[in-house]
Length: 74
Image (cartoon, rainbow, N blue to C red; front, side):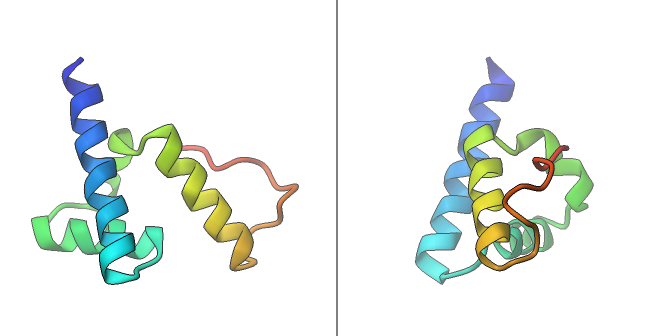
């Protein structure tokens, strides 16, 4: 249950950064890690399915991946 709470809290922070600061999802995650002096690899377990889905949608919209590409895996 504790991991779910941390995942939910992390997702809320990232969604807020995206909406308030008009950042892309990956940029919001990197910004959070820089603020907290964390390695990006250390927060992978906190990326919720909803956040992962938003990142995929954004990557497709930015043409970083094709919509028929393999789903993002962490």
